[in-house]
Image 1 (cartoon, rainbow, N blue to C red):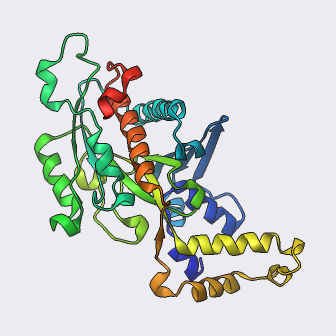
Image 2 (tube, rainbow, N blue to C red):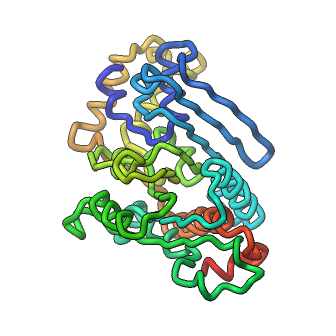
Length: 323
């Protein structure tokens, strides 16, 4: 890829596949995509099965499930409940946990920065039960797993790598599964706050915004790790490139844009570099109503996890557990 595309980072396997397919103009060997949809949402399943596909995609081998629902940007309780149910079903199918499993939920991110606060806010809404297992009533036993949760903060607050903290916790409580929740970066503005990605490959905190961090993976922790993320930001350079591409697509119909019809990739990159010099190229953009959006999507994410972990809880009254 040209230099500009190396700055267009995305944490979504679906977007990585879209960008790569557009570049090579053919299907990618070792990458299988399945899509299903209804009037409210689209579910894409991306499976990366070979080392070569992993190298080309820049994503670890494994399964990535993406749930896209544009209505998540609005107050829509029935849709939110529907997404919770789908998320719970997909998560339960991905991990296939026994009823007596212990699960550690990790809310990654900085609670002081709203676009990065998804993990901590979702972790706060998790129904934690590890300390209550001996007190559960007979009708709940077997359907309420042992769940604990933590929001470990970020390196700049704690002085410790997140992986170091989680490794210590995992070594002591020995969970059967770690679920890591994190805010992601998207390459498409329309996917910000409208998309949830599940992956059985673990996560590298901060990778979407260009920070290299030790990964939370089965290799580093010794237990399976599921990553659950929602894109909350998009790069300014991506928006600039999208604008140029849109103008180019309509150049033939606009008398003032005809000169753009034959712009090369290099020309587009040069324009973006002039508009966004290097110091602004990594500028991250988030919706102005991000406070409400993060609170809403955190409730959806936590609700889906709670439902998957605790099938015997009455989730018709899920709000009792989330607020």
